[in-house]
Structure formats: C-alpha cells, structure tokens
Length: 248
Ligand code: RET
Image 1 (tube, rainbow, N blue to C red):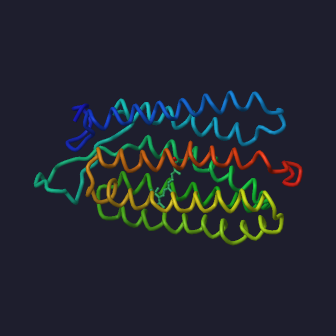
Image 2: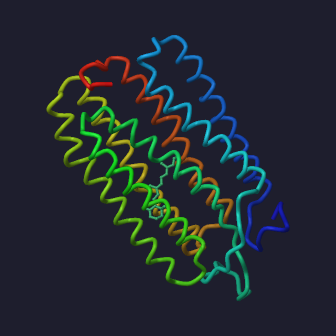
Image 3: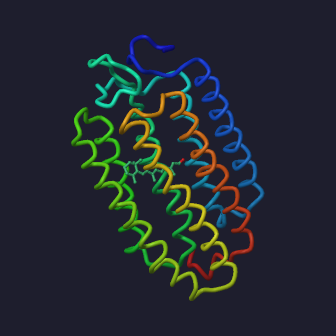
C-alpha cells in the first residue's frame, strides 16, 4: 500500500506510476481537442465540447486514482490467497463519480448522430445512470447482496444496448450515408468496450480476484479506449457529417 490509511489491499507504487501516465494521456488529449475546437465554426463544436468535458472529468478522476485518493476500505468476502477474515480492499468510488458524468456524455456523442428523438435519448441516459449507480452501491456493499446490484446494473446496460441496436440503428439507417457510417462504427466500438466493464467489476470490486494493481491496468486500458480513442475516432468521422440533417 502507498497509502496506509486506505485498506489492507491497496495499489502499489508501480500502479500509481501507470495511473499518472493515464492522467497525462487524458490531459493531453483534452488540450488537443480544445485547440482543434478553435479551428471549427462555433455552431459545429458540439462533439468537441462533449469530448473536452469527458476528458476533463477523466483527468481529475485519474489524478485522484494516481494519488490513491477517492477510495474507501470495504471488507472483502472472497480473499484471493489471503486468510485474514477481516481484510479490507480499497474501493475507488471516485471511478463511479467520473462515470456518472462521462458515460451519459459518451452516449450523447453517439446518440446525437442517430437522429433519434430526445425522448429516446433521455430514456437511454436514465438507464445508463441506473447502471453506474447500482454498480457503485454494489461495490460499497460488503455482503453478497452486492451481486443483486450488479444484476440490476447489467439489466440497465442491456437496456442501453437495446436502444443502440434497435431504434438507434434503424434511425441511423434511415438517414444513411455518413450518418449511418459514423453511428454504426461508434455503436460497435462503444458496445464492445462497455461490455468489458462489468467483467472488470466482477473480478475486482465484486470478487476481489484481481489485485488493485491489476484492476488499475484493466480499467485503465478500457478507459483510454472508451474515452480518448473512441472520441478521436468519432470526431474524425463527424467531419463529413451534415449537422443540418441531424437538426444540430
Ligand atoms: C458496472 C457494474 C454494474 C454492472 C455494469 C457496469 C458497467 C459499467 C460501464 C462503465 C463504462 C465506463 C466508461 C468509462 C469511460 O471511460 C457499473 C461496472 C453493467 C459500462 C465507458
């Protein structure tokens, strides 16, 4: 542990260095997006502003993780090679504060290109918030009831995927052309990456199978792909999309 006040099972200094590197990536890509936004007419910066907000939030979250802050000690039931029945593991609730802000914004980046009505978009954002908050509560619950919250979260995530591949895809197909291409690529990347988060949760926050250092690598790689990489691919793809056709 590099922070003796947190928990028995905590990050290592090696994990902290990796987290500072992820922090630097988030800050750097945010600054690049800010510069890029200046080169674009103000009426067409919607997706740049969303990206700046996402990467700014992630920067603060990774600053917290790297400093080993934003965690609380939770008794763990399933101890990996540990026989101390009172052992606690650090649960970084700061992750969920990041996600409750950034996952709705990531969904907006995608769904604003689908041409779906706002009613459908708001419904999807609500399911997304249920997914993150149940994940947070489940992570903080010390008993096996945590898996109940985990189940609710997965149901909510499949609700989000239903909109992406049902009405969202149908609407993007009706628009066709660059709108359809941008949407289909974004939906494929987003759904593949998001599907990996509950797996990480199950192995880390949930069952304490992977060490906190491994947790930081697992979520860290996912966060780099789901935030800066996803956003850059999306912003490049959006250069060819006609804003007026989407009513933006
Ligand atoms: C939890 C646990 C409860 C069940 C499910 C989850 C899904 C989380 C997801 C998070 C996505 C985060 C992103 C962050 C950006 O960098 C909360 C882990 C389904 C999909 C994209």
